[in-house]
Length: 504
Image (tube, rainbow, N blue to C red; front, top):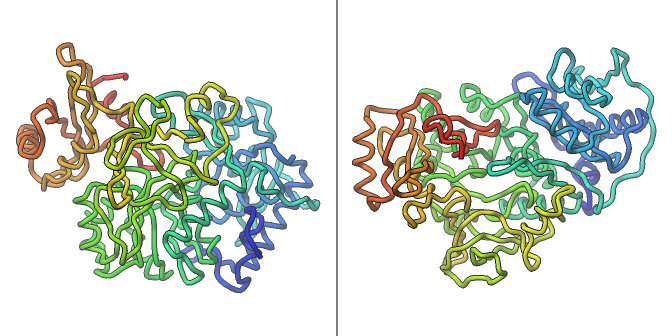
């Protein structure tokens, strides 16, 4: 049967095939059993009064319970609004209120999500697993009443997320079933996913990378998803050996952690069918080290929430993989527009703003006409990223437009400086950022985490051998760790504030 909404994902697959595996002693559900459980929970939600077209805040960590609730919420026609369970009360209140949430689903016991929902007068349900069965409780009473509901349509909103808010207040992003299915189709085709594939979910499911890029795309293809409760480098390879996982996708931070521990963890020399990297730039040195150590092709992808995740990717072999690029468009129109956003598209090799079109792209931000007017030009969605497309159609990103460093009129790509820093044999992690300067307007500073012996001046000297003098960091901070978001991204403004006291 054709997949038109998320409600069609599970019935479309072979019902005896493995759908969800919780490793190291957890439950394992076939598509038939998982579909039956999703339908049962959907009935509970419908009987509880969950309304179509309204958001349900899901505040759960990675697990079978999250996936069951997410798909059950979509099945009844409501809008799933997953949230990071580590948020503070104030953060939960902002996101729940902005989504006009009708219900919050949280783990049993004390939780900031519960406190936020109570403060806003939003009803709360507790969710826990009893084996493979999801138990929902209201004020300690187990929900048992069931009610049938009408399945959603492709035009219905399925998912409500927020932008990361790197340069402004987070904006609400409503994505329809049609948006998501278009993206799942693109991702599945890019990586030739099939029922024989087993994907390890190491990214948070409250984020598009883990949810759409891995979990839902695998279910779309009829494959199996392996869901550990959290990413753990020490159990990563045992779980891969236990489950026969054929691929995983992660941010560069996770790839780097696995590389640093590879020999101690006795990582195999031949591992996955492919390794995918997304959500942040992957330095060419890390790319090459991953392929060499783990014996698998590394495919770098480019995605964003407003595009239901993926927009481009390196192709599978025998297609060419170009380190430093994010590959070719994957079922999405990608172009480069002049920086004035006048609508003029640039020719091959021109540097400007990356713009996109496609069935996977959202129809507009939630209740934000000003943002919509700024984001859409002549039918193209402005990504806010600067880049160029080469003669072979490969896209190279040169940085977030608002993060470019302007030193006396010279525009410096922070990604270029990051890549050079990571070439230093003693540098394990690195990020550069702009710092206000009275003479030049802005100058380059950088923070690094070492994996060997080096000092700041030696690192600057190394950079001077590979970069023009105006791009060399004026200051290099040696750090134990770098500030990150919950998904492992390094946001330059946070690093700048932490090390240089710059609140830009």
